[in-house]
Amino acid sequence: MLQIIYPYRQRDLQRIKRSLNSLQSQTNSSFKVYFVDYGTEPTLANEAKNLVDSYDFTTYIYHYMQHQPWNKSRALNSVIKQLKSGYCFVADVDMIFSEDFVETAISLQKQDTAVYFKVGFLDQVETKKEKEYEKYKIKFESTSEATGLTMFPVENLKTIRGFDEFYHFWGSEDTDAHVRFKHSGCDVQFYDKDILMLHQWHESYRIKEQDKLTKELQLSHIVRLNYRHLNNAIDSKQTRVNKSTWGNVMTKSQFQELETCDTEMTSILNTLDRIQHFLYVELHNLEPGIYRFRFYSNSSEKSLKQKIKKHLGKENEVFLTMKEVNDMVLLHIISFYRNKPYRYKVNDKLQELYLTITL
Image (cartoon, rainbow, N blue to C red; front, side, top):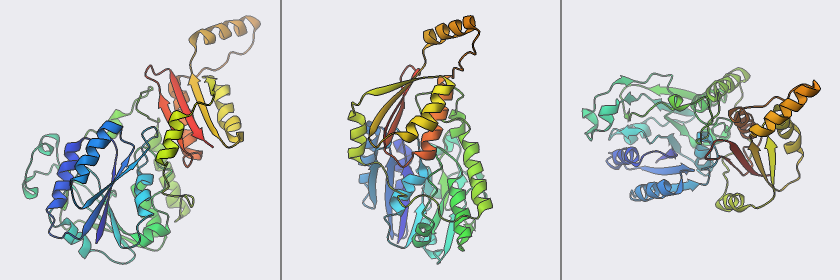
């Protein structure tokens, strides 16, 4: 039995359909799919659920994380932690599988060994075509550096506590898992005898990164930080990561409690000293409970204070852009409070940030 895990969030349904259709025609039906929706907005999530549920080999799982940044590691861990034994394969909704993928993967299963696979990439035009697997034209092939699509022995993966949940947004969590898997005394092999998967084209996620605040949660230079964290894993020879609560996600009741919370909101102006004091002093010392915070920019207040201080010969306050505030607050939350129930939003006018968190 091969246990296939799809981590998913806010992607178009057509690519999901192509991927699951390719599994429907496998020569070996000894597999099960866990489709983990990590916070897609409700309307699309309902459509995705209806599609996924139409296949008899799938289980759709929804996590209430739409107001948190993407965390592929936690999405995967939420399933891995519940698996009893056997082998699991980390899939992707962009994959179209050859009909003998499952059969080949099962034949490669070996104790204490993980296997990852070469992938053929389709261009934008070819992706939109409906063809038999063998008739697709591959634009280029992946190398051994592409580590994302891996089959792991479940027991070994659970021993190292799955994927490192520090990694948010995109990058490095797959290679990190390989590195720690090897450090634990296991082997990682690259299967490149045949191309058993095709990657449907999509726009690069890095192209979407902007140096200004957007409604979609983003964090400047996160790819570099993730890569630095990977280097630390390599140098430190560490194997286990995450707390004992690894794989735990916010429940529906916790999500609803944050959504309906009406406790008094604390407003924090976008000055460097206020933001720093909040992050490194105030937040750390709060008693258990649910708290709401609003980070805002007030141009008139800024102008008045600057004029008064200039008149008095005092040092002016350092005002941050809301993008800078976003990056400071979001990085602090995912670094130190990612295991707490929280919601984080940017308002429509991109002038205010809202954080609700259970401590």
